[in-house]
Length: 267
Picture 1 (spheres, one colour):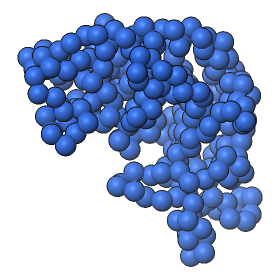
Picture 2 (cartoon, one colour; picture 1 turned 45 degrees about the vertical axis):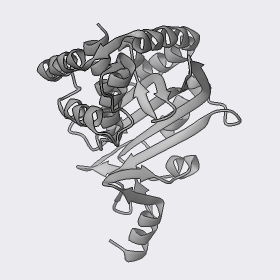
Picture 3 (cartoon, helix red, strand yellow; picture 1 turned 180 degrees about the vertical axis):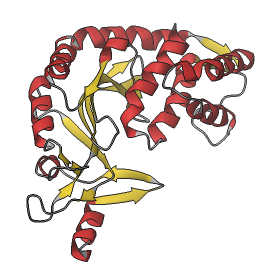
């Protein structure tokens, strides 16, 4: 690899606490090069990003963007020039902050791309981020859609349009769920029962056990924002688990893991 190219990549991507954080602007992602793997040239990011933003009704004057990338590579000079490619990235449109009770949430619509998988994947999702911790909440199965990236993407774009059209209904639904979470009190024994239930059933979803073990630590660590002594509520428990999902390097499956938690904990 050319050393100058390597230094340019380092300046655009920084590593913090073992997690890749995006420092590129939208145009940097749009203009990044094609990813080539096993002699297969994948779509340019802008051919995925632009339709997504159009379908979601992105407004650059009011919406904010959050972008993360992983596994940046320098391809062979298929197109010439620097040729930095991002085979795995997340683009999240973050809309107005809304309050459910005294807790602030941000309305989000996301696009996840994984070209470096055995089966390349595209995933769209919608949900809410808790503003204080940026933990994603996905409460319904129909708020995620994924498919093979190499197939026609019509179904993905249709799902994105559906997310946009159902935006008001989603906000009303999340407000109701949030209030139920806050109003559901849990003592120590009840928290332990629910953590045990999650551990026994986590592998039935994509949640896995790691976020649950992490939550158990957070709930008992006096330095943690989730610590409690005698009593807490379901909202605190839910976010203690999603904190581990937020902190994970597993970029592609954040919405799936979060929905897996909601499926187990809220039903």
